[in-house]
Length: 194
Image (cartoon, rainbow, N blue to C red; front, top):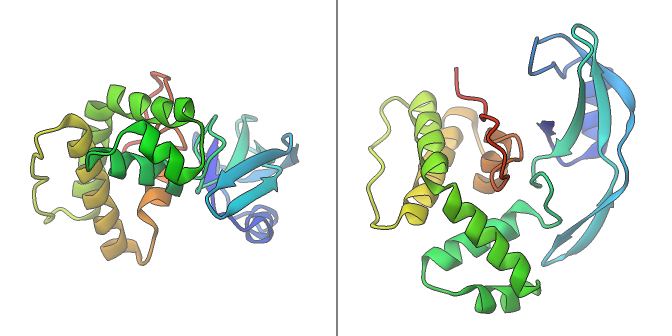
């Protein structure tokens, strides 16, 4: 899985131009068909997309190019999931959040539970990103809640990314920094900043 931008024309141009590299060996990625069509839901409507598949010219490993506004195995945009996480940390329950987003209660409850289960790991990961992007960043202040601490770390890391790299959406940064696995139940480690 390789996180890329949301504009399929730009992504295809980067792929054809040889500007996408294998995350494993760094060799050039080349086109290798497409995945099956998927629906991505958001509060502003749904969109259908077909993720591009690639193969590494060096090591032969295949990768799926996933837009960075998504998460692996989730049908909803990261902005809506992030809204649910922040709203929950502010005190709202899954029923109220589901009503606002127009999603099933079980879907929202699943997001919140998965985030809470990985909150310590998420906080540690984004603290590393914050320090790698801005060694002079202020320490991440504890909030009294493990999930809120994880959200704080995401925010601090995203702010450091903006200072270093320019404008970027915090939730799209969170998706890219975890290779789309922010809410995954895998033990596979996320890429750490160099």
